[in-house]
Image (tube, rainbow, N blue to C red; front, side):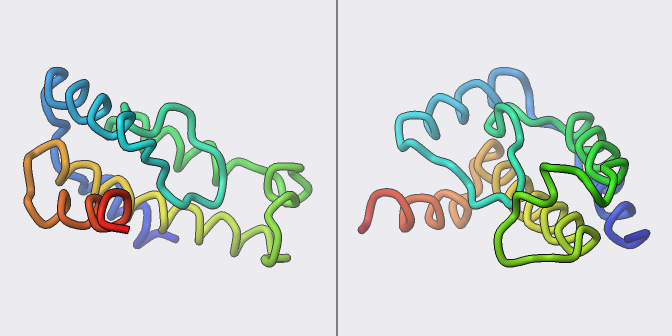
Length: 116
């Protein structure tokens, strides 16, 4: 998990407020919802600071947490934490790409939400 924390800390700088808001609006029009393991409030407005807070929040959950136990198909609470934090990081990196106008990131979202 130390490697994962390092990846969280190494995230690039946030986009501007305007880029964050425009991207959030674009994603809302598509009803975009990334496939996360645990709930994350207002995903489309996440910032690096909130990502680090989410990392700390999840790591602090007890193994008896109802949130962790509610995950279907994974019995080990530590595995739930690791999978959630890994998926969240991947989805946030995609979100950063969207905010910065990365054509590949937009192609990924368009393929999932418009082309089908």
